[in-house]
Amino acid sequence: MTEESPVKFELVDINAILQTLPHRFPMLLIDRVINIRADYSGIGIKNVTFNEPAFQGHFPERPVYPGVMMIEAMAQTAGVIGIKSVEGTEKPRAVYFLTIDKCKFRKPVLPGDTIEYHMRSLGRRKAMWWFHGDAKVNGQVVAEADVGAMLTD
Image 1: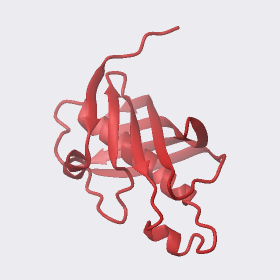
Image 2: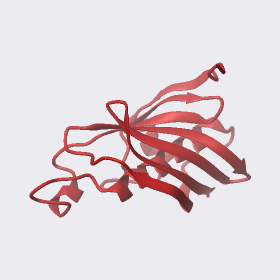
Image 3: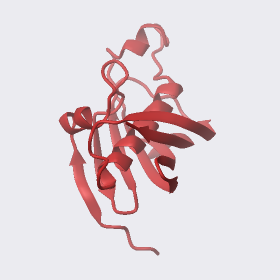
Image 4: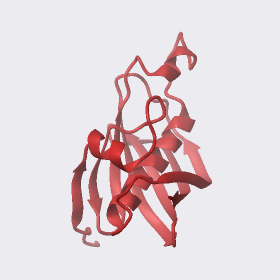
């Protein structure tokens, strides 16, 4: 069994996320990031509430949190991990998707659920990062994907 990397940032709260990412309501899709480790892993947290804008049309009679928003939240979590982890990247940056691979949706996410985005780095080249993400609700995987992103000025 491998030993976990040390935690560099125990908590990145919403105020720090707002200083780190350029995203704003309604497209800021994470509430905090916890346990950012030296191996470039961490966990993004999203508290899903009934008043999310997406539920007005997805679906009014049976609200289901859109999978595409979970994938975007994975990328935002990866962006916070990358920006916070590397010296000299603490200033606000744009984070752009490069790739989405091996994406699977396993179970619906409903209002009242808390999603944990467990992200771990697969690799990095200059300003480009690749992560694997598992979205979990109550410990069960509800979605997974490999995402690539690029940090820019």
